[in-house]
Length: 321
Image (cartoon, rainbow, N blue to C red; front, side, top):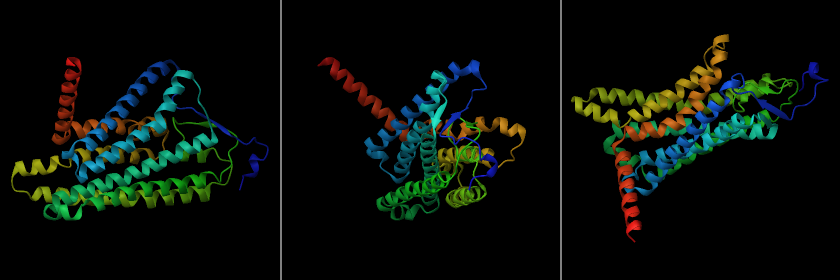
């Protein structure tokens, strides 16, 4: 229901993504920085996907989920960065209501899926470290497919419910979104409808679809750390920890940034840093995740070495022939 005080206002069908417009002298620099980030993100994640698919030594549950995560990160970055990069160059900050809702749907869908995929990956590491004798039995190919599918479906359900709520709102008055992408909270703030029920329902949806995977991740690592500490030899502890350290770094950075953005008090200082911290969970993780997994993982580095070696051999053969 629309608020009576907005009765004479024009209904908004387009928004302005303000993003980093308060830094006019840095637009070209920001264009170059985020363009490089996007290229590195897509190249790094697609490389992980190609290695996981092509190298039979990586045909294990851990790398199957890593391939899913890399595919997700490529899509997630492509949902946000191309539009933002183009706006730095052209100065066009306008986005239609339908375009804004579409962007948020994919952001919510992929973000929710990532929460579940990270939880599934932590459960995989829990079984590998805490139940090594039963790992092959529990984490079979069928279960891997079911867990991956459940992650994607859960993210889709959460995003669909949220976008259905947002589409019930009427927007009028200001059309400036103080963010670099269409985020649900920013859209709700611009609505001239009564948003109390929508805000409550959005919170409930976020709570239901993000708390369970977060708790599963935390509980898994509590058991993992407890098991590692019981290993008598230092080398054994280091070897066990190395199998999950990359994932732990990714999880910590992902949830750490989300907690800072959404749970800490919205003081004046924090509001100024809101967009900066948002970069730390929307833009940077997809870029650094391939680096974290490849630099700290012997199997991935070996697969990459073999792939590069094969490329060099094929290249030489082509020169010869």
